[in-house]
Image (cartoon, rainbow, N blue to C red; front, side, top):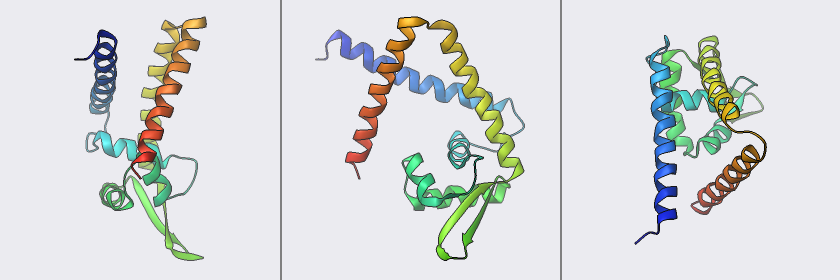
Length: 151
């Protein structure tokens, strides 16, 4: 049987994960981009607005296979959010970028994340913020190692 600390941590992590996803979905439904799923929003977010990214880079960031990403990209192309092209130097390399419509979604989603972080910063100060940042960093590194161990 789990001890109290394990139960509390498990409950908090699961609830936090679920709450963020549900809040993101509700925020998405209040925009004009109701044809997108949360997974598609996260794909758009991973592509980003900084320039062209390869399918391999995006798949790595999303922790999915290139095959799974290809299916998602095909849907986003049909919806007009993403463009795909091959580079002339090596036709095997596929570059993906956002259309103007995709950039609009990226910007709206970025506002959601900024509001989330601003709220955290309003509620945590000084040592509490330092402790939270270190704890989340450690949790993130743990999950990154766990992910890498499955490859």
